[in-house]
Each structure stands twice: as C-alpha cells, then as structure tokens.
Length: 129
Image (cartoon, rainbow, N blue to C red; front, top):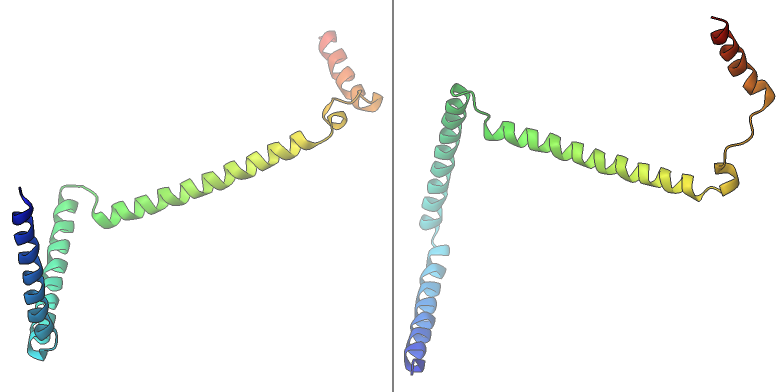
C-alpha cells in the first residue's frame, strides 16, 4: 500500500543527494567560497573566545567554578582514582603473596627465651607497683 510512496521518497532523496553533491563539489573548488568560509570560521572562533572569557568572568563574580577549574578538579580526581587502583592491586598482590607462603611459616613460632625476658621483666615491674 505504501510502497509507491516509499519509492517516491527514495527517488526524491537520491535526486536531492545528487543535486547537493554536485553543488557542494563546485563550492569546494571555488577559492572565493573557501576564503569566505575561512573568514566566517575565524570570526566564529573569535566570538566563542570572547563569550568564554565573559562567561568565566560572570562565573567568578558569582563565586562559581569555571569550566577550566572543573576540568582541573576532574583530572586530579582521575589521578587519585588511578593511584587508588594501583595501591589496591599492589595490596592484593601482597595479600596473595602472604597467603602463598607455607603454613609452617605462617604459624606463630614458640617464643624464644631471650625474646620473652623483656616481656616478663615488664610484667613483673607492673605487679610490684
């Protein structure tokens, strides 16, 4: 039912694409057009710079952060996040290495007499008081 309408739309789109393609091809090779487009883009960029500066001044007047300041904060947060990830990985590697040690080394060793002596002396001094 709608196939005839779809065919017409498809043909119209193809014709429009060809016509615009031909027209734009001519413009791209026209040096005057290119020169005027360059001037237009330069004026647009100048206007954008003026607008950005005015906006930053207004934001500062309202004690709000500028886009540049927000980008700096986001970069610092990203750096902190990367450091945190690195430390987490290093900690996990350390824990894995500790768990991989033989069970005999992980078990507490019997106290050596010379290591127990200072603890006994301190305990005895507390009891005398």
